[in-house]
Amino acid sequence: MKIGSRLGHSRETRREAAPAPRPVRRPAGLGDALYSEIYIEVIDRLETRGALELDPQELMARVTELVAQAVEARRLALSSRQREQLVAAIGDEILGLGPLEPLLADATISDILVNAPDQIFVERGGVLEEVEVRFRDQAHLLNTINRIVARVGRRIDEASPMVDARLPDGSRFNAVVGPLAIDSPVLSIRRFIGGPVSLRELVERGTLSVGMGHYLKSAVRAKCNVLVCGGTGAGKTTLLNALSRYVSSRERVVTIEDSAELRLQQRHVVRLETRPPNLEGRGEVTIRDLVRNALRMRPDRIIIGEVRGPEVLDMVQAMNTGHEGSMTTLHANSVSDGFSRLLAMLSMSGTQLSEPMMAQLIARAIDVVVHVARAPDGRRRVSAVAEVAGVQGMSFELNEVYRAARGDAAEGSRGAWLASGQSRLLERFAAAGAPLERRWLAPAAGEGA
Ligand SMILES: Nc1ncnc2c1ncn2[C@@H]1O[C@H](COP(=O)(O)OP(=O)(O)OP(=O)(O)O)[C@@H](O)[C@H]1O
Ligand SMILES: [Mg+2]
Image (cartoon, rainbow, N blue to C red; front, side, top):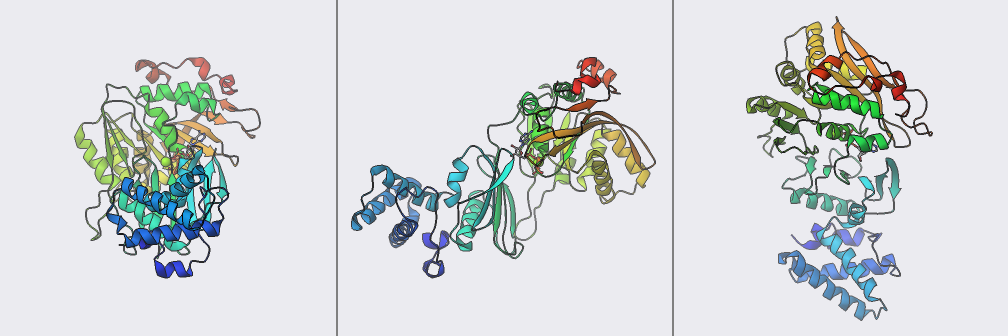
């Protein structure tokens, strides 16, 4: 394949593609039109010289040479800095993720969301904003997607138009192309900037109070089964990661995820990741397969990145049978919605249990539920921590230990939580050598503790 077509502008598409590429790293003082003129000239020459066989370093040397020639031919007065920028921008197009490179280089960006060639959003500090970066056209975007996907050893096309993968730097990458994506190929990248966040840092960010932090620490140490629920991007995985630090390094942990996001610090951790089916539709390994297999691996704890299907049956069974201290996340809008979702997933898992039996299984499996929510200003806040006390028929009896006070936590009063003062787990915490001081449960402990 020729470089030009890899880049999404073979001669044919280039002719139609009216607006030129607008790289953000285009050197200052060089107009868009001039940039793309040079860019296309460089690409054309690379193509005719069979530059695809070159390794990246040689290719960049060639680009530098061709840029110099193009600049000379036009008698442009560019500084050496401007030339370097020009070479870097063209290099990004050929070797890297093109227009996305500058966004990836920006450490304050946590999400990159491409809806269309000319519609790109990023998330910074929890807030979404549209950026000026553009792909030339859909073909350019599609080629960038193809390049990323090929690099991680997967493929995307009409036959399998969706890919969810982990990039070499640990970022989570998702792309959908036609016919599933109707208007344009789309892609999203969730990055993990700055490594895992600690509970202390979450307290500093106003996500939870000191008291709640102590409570959750005790719960993890005492091997309670913990469910973290919340909406999309609410910070469930981040919180789960923070909690996982308190797992004893003497325990054997198996983590199971669709794309590995958990960063456990302990040595004795086995990480498993699912696999999508191949082109013939074979070879798929699901979360459920992995949970079942994990049970044969003598785990002390199983941590499932997110439950969203029939694996919930195997998970609650494991939690009920000696794999205490297991943790997972679940997409749900509230604590009670979380239980409804667990029940719904359980009833679709092929079990013959009656509904009240399923409710009992869940109530016995889960000890503590934490709900995280994302405020409109981008802040994340734990809105409730509840213990499961039991179940009556189909209704779960919850003991709410902490609850976010009404009002906006963002308005100065960070950490405005109310504590009920009651926990049924204090003895268990103490017996496990992880006692919780009563003051962290005192109603006042919620106040900005
Ligand atoms: N407490 C927090 N304060 C501020 N930002 C946070 C917090 N927790 C997470 N984030 C940011 O929010 C984004 C989503 O975090 P995370 O992956 O933990 O959410 P999630 O609920 O697991 O999302 P998903 O529904 O996609 O699985 C990340 O960019 C992360 O850096
Ligand atoms: Mg998550």
